[in-house]
Image (cartoon, rainbow over all chains, first blue to last red; front, side, top):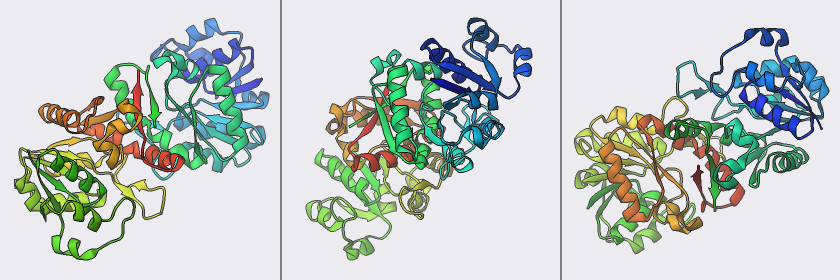
Length: 226
Length: 226
C-alpha cells in the first residue's frame, strides 16, 4: 500500500520503518528535506535521526506535500504544534477522499515536564484537522501509546490492552481497525464514536505523562476492563 | 472510625451506606438538611434520595460543618461545582490535620452530554482544595469509577483494574491505600505522586464519559498494563 507519513520524529520513523519492512511503499514527509539532512541532531531519546537514516536510507524522504501526494493513506505523526502547518503544506487536494490517521498530541512543554495540552476539553487536534480538511477521512488512533508500543502491542502485557478509534467515517475506521490488527498485531481496538470522542484519548495523555514518570519508561498501556 | 462524608449524591450515599455497614461511625453532610429532606426529588439514576433514606435513616445527616467536625476522616463526595463552597462551609478548623479524600469531578453539563471539565489541564480540583485548605491532608482517589465500582471493584473484571492516588502527604496516601483495600477490596492502588498528578485521573473523565456512552453503563474501569 502507498503510505505517506508526515513527520520524522520517533513516531514517524518507527511506523515508517515497520511499514516498509512489511512491504508497503512508504514515503516520509518533512517540512524541509535539506534542512533535516543537514541538522545532525543528537537523539533526545532512542536513536538520532542520522542513526535511523543510516539503517533506513532506502525509505524515500520528501516534502509534506510529496509524501501525501504519493499516498493512498496518510499518517499524521507530526507533533501537535506542527500538525496544522504540516497539513496546510500538504494541501486539501492531497487529502481529499483519503484516510488520514492522526496520531498527534498537543503536548506543550513550554513550562517543562509534565507538559500540558494546547488543545483540550472542548476541542481536540483531531477535530481541528477534520474541520480544516473536511474532505479527509480522519481517524484518531495510537496517540495513547509510545511509538514502540504502537507497532508492537504484544511487547506490553502480551497485548492485553486497548487502542482507541475516533472518526466520523465508519468505512475509514473499519479500514484502520484492520490495519492496526494486520500491520501491528493489535487485538483490542475500541471504537469510541465520532471525531469529537478524540478528546478522551487526547486527554488521556495527562495521565500517560504521569505514568511515564512513575514507571520511568513508556512500556505500558491501559486496558478497558468490563 | 468516625467518617464525615460531604454530599448526598449517589457517591456520598453509596459510600456512606457501605461504611456504616462496615461498622464505622458515619455522618453525612449536606448544605441544608431541612431543604434536602423536603425536596423529594425523583431519582436521576439509581434510587432517589428518599428511597435511599428509607433504607438508611439510621445514618445521621448534618450540615457540612457538623459532618466534618464529627470526623477523623473527611470524604468529599460533592459535585465539582459544589466542592469549594462545601469546604468553605466546613471551615479550615474542621479540616486541619485530617485526611481529606477527594472524589469530586468538575463535570460541566451546561452544554449537555458529554460534559466538559470546569477545571482542567494546568490545574485540578484536588489542587484547588489543597491550596485553599493547606492544613488538610488531601488525597485524590476513586473519581475515575462509578459509585458502585468504588465500593465493589470485584464487580468489574474480578477487580483486575486500577484506582489512583494523588497527594502531597505520604502518610495520608498510605492510610487511604489501606482503606481502599480493607473497606472496598481494591487490589491495585497506584500512587501517581503529588497532588498535581490528580490532573491525570481528573482528565481521564473525558474518556470515561465516552466509554459510558459506548457501554451504556458505568460498570467498567481501566487497568494499567505493563
